[in-house]
Length: 612
Image (cartoon, rainbow, N blue to C red; front, side):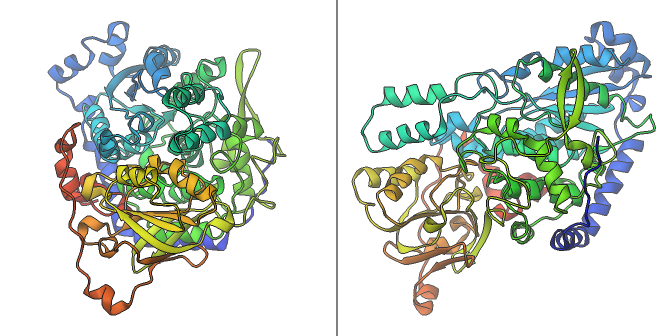
């Protein structure tokens, strides 16, 4: 491939990376010592008893002699397959294909285990959404259970959606001595135009169309196998894996069922057989995921206007590798990383159009060329991230990679770093007497970003919907939804609020949302200060707000402020928390709520209690 211009790394990116490295020195050293010892002394095939080993290959059919002999890599497949979740339905046939591809290289593969895969699209606005964030920890533990058998010298991870990729990565990082590649399945083809979908949703919120019309629009949007095509958490996951060098280059957004999709899975399997510890090109996951790779993921998130959920997931992933990342790091990076992609809900086109315009190979080349991404990381495929700036294509049915396009094929979706959509990354840290919060500004028109208005306080999103239907919110307003943090109810997404708040904004009102919960990774046009920390359940300041208090939300100044006299504010008592709800399995997650740490650290009871 032609050379890519690699200037010195941006001084702010370098400073933040070095700050993370220094802050993480002790925890990273402990982590690297752990994975080195796990490789040499941990549970793996040579250390298994004969009985252990016989159980491990008893049902392996034609692969039994190779697994028994122990002279070839045995790849552990951790799969998040289910056929209710459209993004993961294509994974049903992957294990059998991977076994064939492994045999082509004299290796073997077995399914190490399955992990749950929750669809936030199905659970959005439902009680079951309160299980969503904690499902990430369940996935991490499930991956660990599968890999703990010690039968494997490498891992292929099959997962795409919101909590699944972070969970798979967190769990597998505790087996960081294993080389690991994440294998995507791709987005569904584009369906109903996103603007039309939003229009129908808002009409439904206003009572102007019925359920049948809404269902018709939704099913025309989400219509087949593959990832949802908006740029939410699932597709942001794929972007981050490419920025960290954990996918085969350019593999994220190739549609399911395509011949190219299958060949990329073959290439990932073949590559896995080349990077094991018995060879000369050993690439353990724990060495691939270092501070520079984590910073690259943040830079990619900011440059593409990705999901707000990763402000929670990235610190958790980093902790699993002994790296300490915080919101100040992400805010500082956002100030110097330009927004070079505009994918729905930030723009009009979806992820398929983004891919056609140049996609991730173009993004990687631009970010390296602007000195914003670290090229010198250990990837799963080559000598540096520079090789990630290549597009996979088929020539005579053979997979080859060609250089990324030099020019965006659609400048409404992708722009060069020198001429971005906006000069910063569009994700802002807000601070003030209401705590610390995140706001995604890249999807919000600038004139709507700063709001100062009386607040109305709620404890549930259903109560907001009822007030909207009753006409009680028709004014300039800051809607506050509290007791939605990890300890209160598992930190559900509150995407159900987007249509009614969008209607209010369209009527000309100044509208903002403040919550200690989450919004969808596809958060849209209404300014939303989310993940407020400390949360109300832990006596965070949202618990002091009263209806009518004037609240200021100002991303320009990074302000999140209740404009209440200081003496009165300090004298106020906390509002009483609502009772904890049971049903839909929520009571089974009580220990995760009780022990979870703050959103800024990842909202994880598992990592907290492990001392990570």
